[in-house]
Each structure stands twice: as C-alpha cells, then as structure tokens.
Image 1: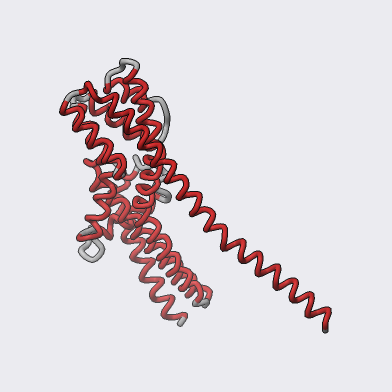
Image 2: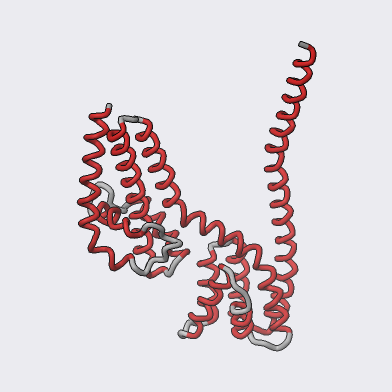
Length: 284
C-alpha cells in the first residue's frame, strides 16, 4: 500500500509542478482578483493549465451553469472569465488535496491520509463549485428583505415631487448592501445613456429575484404608459411588499424554531440518561 501511495503521490506531485509551470502565464490575469473572494489564487494556474486540455476543460452543462451564475454575480461581459476562474479554483483545490493526501500517506506509511486527501478534495471542490450559487441565494434573500423599504422610500420621494430617476439615485446611494449596489449599477447605466426602462429592466434581471422581477416588470409597464400614475403604483406596491416581508419573517421565525427542537431534544435525552443512570446506581 505504501508503494502504491508513493507512486501515485509522485505522479500527482510531478503533474502539480508541470501544471504550475504552465500556469505561470495566467498570473497576470489573476492579480486583479480579491484575496477574500478568491483565496490561494497563486495556485489557480494549476487549474487554468488543466482547463487547456480536453480532459478537464470547462465545457458542456458545467460551463453553462457557471457562466450563467457569473453573469448574475459579476459584469456579464466578464462572465466567461469568472466562470473559468471558479473552475480553476475547483481543479486546483482537488489536485492539491489529492497530492497532499497520497504524498503524506506514502511518506508516513499511513493510508488514513489518502482518505483525508479525498475528503478534502470533495469538500473543497464542492465548496468552490457551489460558492457562486450560494452567494446568489444570499443576495436574493437580502433583495427581498430590503425591497419593501426601497419601494416605500421611492413612493415618499416621488410624492414629494421628485422624478423617478432622481428618486432611484437617492435610494441607491442612501444605503449599502447587495440590492443597493445593483441599483447603483442602474444609475451608472442611466448616466451612460441607457434609458430608464432598460436600466430598471436590467436591474430586475440581475437581481434574479422573482419579487423584484415582478416589481420592475410592473414599473416598466407604468413607465411605458406614462409616469403620472407611478406614485399611486409605488404606494400600492409598498403596502404589498411590507405584507410579503411580514410573511417571510414569520416563515424564518418558524424555521428557526424548528431548528431549535433538535438540540432541545438532545439535551432532554441527555438529562433523562443521567437521571436514569443515577436511579439505577442507587438501586444497585
């Protein structure tokens, strides 16, 4: 077993060195990545080098999934780049984990390291592959929670005489958060010549949230018909959004309460075991 581990570990180590050497040419394209979002980016050249081959190249359904997620999370024109970076993350993490596991197993004659390496490869690979998906889910939840406040604030501003574009900008730059960042992007699009309708529609698409898509769709229809009824529309939407938020918060409260049942049950069982053990001890 030790010989097999040493052979496989050596092969993986040689491949690691070769791929790192070939991946040096991608270092320039990795410098702009944030360390917090892309940890250990110095090793991503391994994944980029593997991606150049036919065996582990980004393609098919996996490519389609990652590119679509990157379009929503980052600038759509850089979606292909970020999808490739994520794929390189996955491959690099898997290769490093397997290499470390087999090398350590062979060096110390302890096969358990192989299992650890495989588990690490699976965990890290899954984490990096699903990271964009989880970030999108988190952003969607934040968008839904913040939407009622956004709509009600816009309704107040427009009732006070402010036009939609100015109200949108005022709300966007009035607070920090994922949904406000998307609104700021819409403001930038408007400043660059995009129409209000197209910018608001794009905001709804980028949020990837059914509630916001529904709101922006109705808002776009109102803009196309004319802006005189927009304040009434926003007032009605504000009331509906606050009702929706109450329902969501109630659902979250019920979910949190149900999660507490398991630890409470374990504590109760533990107490019962202690009491029964003490009673049996006294009888004996």
